[in-house]
Amino acid sequence: MNRIKEVLKEQGRTQRWLAVQLKCTYVVANNYCNNITQPNSSILRKAAHLLDVDPRDLSNKTKRSSTIH
View 1 (tube, helix red, strand yellow):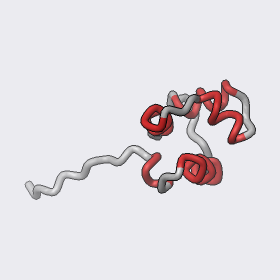
View 2 (cartoon, one colour):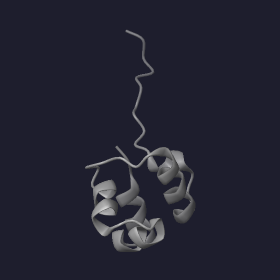
View 3 (cartoon, one colour):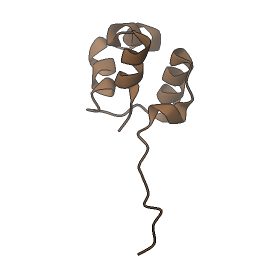
């Protein structure tokens, strides 16, 4: 799971913009944004660079329970 769509929205950018920047089709970018397919690590890094965020910021962070049962 990734946060590409969320970050695009925060920055006022579109999926079409991302497709052009990544040199891929709109369908591929849309699939990344809607978590239908996941970008490989090099594409994720490129998207992060284009969006000026850390690649980790595009990944959904899972919460770990800090309490011990």
